[in-house]
Figure 1 (cartoon, rainbow, N blue to C red):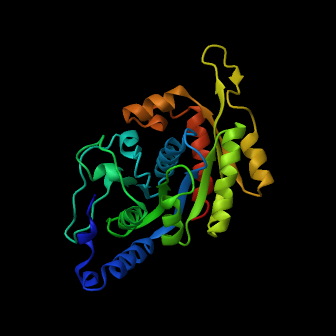
Figure 2: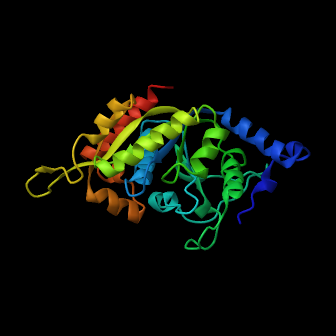
Figure 3: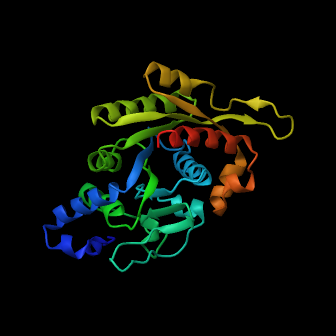
Length: 280
């Protein structure tokens, strides 16, 4: 089990440990303007890739962004950002988030353990504590945005975020296919149940442009995300087309948007990022 609870400020540590952590979370959140949890109803929809690329797009627009990977059993954020090594602590005994560039930093359970392929076998209470520590015991500083990459579904991790960050808003990722849309409706109802505001829905893998003839192929259907958003009275944020280079760049820890600045995918993320920037 990862232990970072001893990084609580010394003045707070004299209080009950749970209260001290709650105070640290409140203090940290007070320095962050906007908080968004990126979630999906099922796996395989490119949720983490969407969260990473959205964070990159915001950073490219000049925003200060913190990316929190709370997919504790499948932490892929560090690999997609090309981040390596274990996090250090500052003079206040808070973790220093891994820096991707001047505007983007990240924290993940993978940045706290030596064995990158070790299985994380934790029950709900431990997950709750670690997620709170990712927020309150990390030296995030002043941020414009905190993006939280949650695992698929409606389990402990998104519930902890909803309970710990009262003003967090959800960005839900889906693909156009009906099986994904059926699950995303559960995510929407989850948000309504826990009274988490939904910022909007993103349709990922929305069409594939053939590199040879440029014909757009709707491999996973067409328009399902927008229809679902309309039916569920949720804002539709946009479509992200399917591009194999996104996968290749993610596997290699290379920024797709920097390598392909004129790509349709890059433009799509910039447009969605612009909608988030407009909330500042």
